[in-house]
Length: 568
Image (cartoon, rainbow, N blue to C red; front, side, top):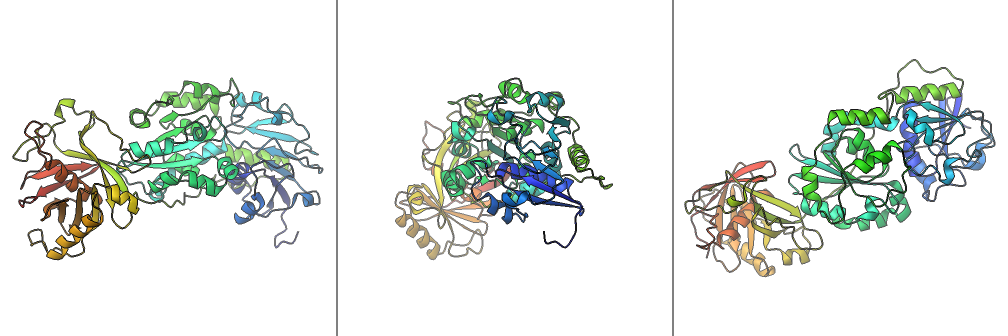
């Protein structure tokens, strides 16, 4: 092997798919950060069905890949794997087998349970385990070293990246991060309820929640990256943050406020971190009965097939410290020490002195995610959560708000089917479809009741006359989209609302928020449309000239003051 350094030990990392690669990299980058040790990767011939283009993926990560037929020519000191399956090596080398998820989550009677020819021509085999209880579900051949869980330790380390992670995902300080995670196979969340991503996005107000998704690598590889993203296209257009299967999932889970998952390892790690967790899954025949994971899944909250996600997620609360501590006690030993203990085991197997420098542990790369802000959304005026039903009607000809301190607006992305989510118990007015001119698809803009546009001409001050050019631009937009009810434009601190069939736009002054902010523009349109429906018997009068209207959308608060000029 051509090299600049002459390492004293050679480690071969045997990987079968993207899942085992991620597990191996997280550990190897920490415990073999030693210039005396060279790590190379190789893919065995009886590779996983989910290993298409694996060698190219390894090289793209900057890894040195040795073809399997050349491995036996090397003088190997240690084989490291993250699966009990794989082709045998004819060389005599000790083998360290790491978990690639939490312990053995799959059925322990499977074919890979006991195949003593796997990865052997060996002296010793050591299975790394997170807890003594996991030993009974490991293959009977080889030794067991209870070292703790390197994945959990990595997740704990990733907590320190929460601010950077949430910034990378576009989560504002006042928003909550909902993480939807799915394992693979027929009973996973992705297979059991593939519409759940659209459901959550369409129900959770976009100003209060950001939604991210983590899919098992076998979904990406088994169906293809293009196909996976195509299936998720509507959710992506609605603002979903789709995390790469190679990097970023650990800090994303560590930064989550709410987790919606299944019976897979990622969801269980969220449990171990003390996150509020709700599950969707089919049958549980993939789990080994009697394991900590299987027993915990059966006791955890589950979203039933006909239940809507919003109500359950909003009521979801974190487990108690005592229950999380008990789960950790039964699942993982040596928390925070897994990398140190793994390194000692590995160096002992190599018959090599362990470095004096402590292992720093693994902290994942921040997620690199591109997302698009929804160009169309549903908007509704609602009463605050917990406000009595009898306070639905907000009245007062003088513009005062009776039985409510502020008017609340909620926005949710437009998703197929185009019917809006409606909470009849909370809704005061709406939902109404709004579209941003210039970024919305023409077909969506044609269906929208509210059109949001930038003003083509500046208004010098809130009291200045409305220039004819602005009025004509508003009329031209309504002529282009004849099905719309109104068009809204902003200029400095002023919002202009022109109704279909009207001649003169209504002026709305904004305090505490830019007039160009989509929240302010949408709220002004809703108030205008609501005011046009005032009837004596309903008593719904939300638009009174000259009185500031306190508004809230998510955590943003501002006031709208309606001008005196009437809508034709």
